[in-house]
Length: 104
Image 1 (cartoon, one colour):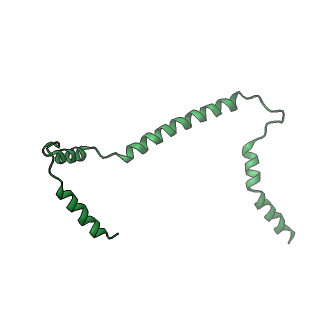
Image 2 (cartoon, one colour; image 1 turned 180 degrees about the vertical axis):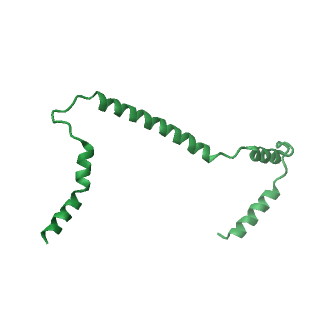
Image 3 (spheres, helix red, strand yellow; image 1 turned 60 degrees about the vertical axis):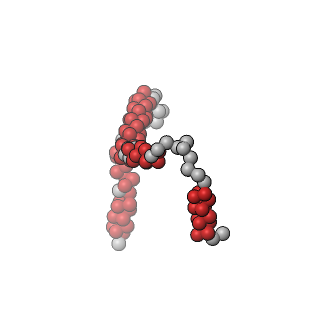
């Protein structure tokens, strides 16, 4: 259907209806004034609240895991120095390259 023709018919139908006294005077202006008075939602405050809640839950999870690791019984294997194992793993490629160079 042609939109211009539809718009013309709708406007003609609206003009043919008599004005009703049921609607108070300047009702639409009051409604629009109330809509303009509504505060604009602050997106930054929503993000700030969500991030603080997430930070609080992360701290709670961290405390639970710290307590669990502190109070858990020691395993049967001897304790190893994690920093030394990490360094050996990271530098393993360097050690292999040096041993390959010494062969030449």
